[in-house]
Figure (cartoon, rainbow, N blue to C red):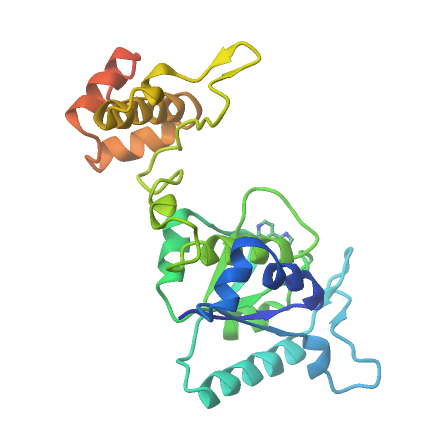
Length: 255
Ligand code: 4F9
């Protein structure tokens, strides 16, 4: 069972995750553990200072190394006391490695991580050098802090835990699970304001339905994310019939 220790000045961000939707089920069923730690509780001065101005000048504030290091020590102790293995520390930063489904899948199978949510102006580099194992990013944009990426990551992990999603198949059919974007979905009514559901989906022929979905996924992925198609080609993850369809759509293999 993954245990997540989150370091944040705003632990209230994480309450909704525990109380709503799919992620709530992961916590309620004890399949995922989340502990929030406020570095302000680990300060030692009367003002409970957690940041200061950057050396060399410039805008913004930089988080102090010491309260963060104390927080990390307290987390390590708590994990030890609970007989839980030590876990790596990840820092959310736009300069980090992009989060993808593979990383999420691996995390769902792991003992968890400690997530450090900082403000962008940053954290004293010496704390990063001493205690941070990896920096991860949600994408090429800047946020006011790491809380939103932490929520995104925790949500993505929670829905992969066994029994959390309505159907175990759901996660296997997601976008990216086979390296492709998900196909379109339809529900009742059969005709909505003159627009009919694609005929293949009404056929009851499972092979035909699967083929229609695969084709839609391939079309969509080629159109929107040709980089994913290139990746699958490189790893030889496409079937003969996939390649036939792609070449009919004008895709030529890059050699
Ligand atoms: C982190 C942005 C991860 C994107 C952290 C400010 C961030 C971020 N992905 N922005 N702090």
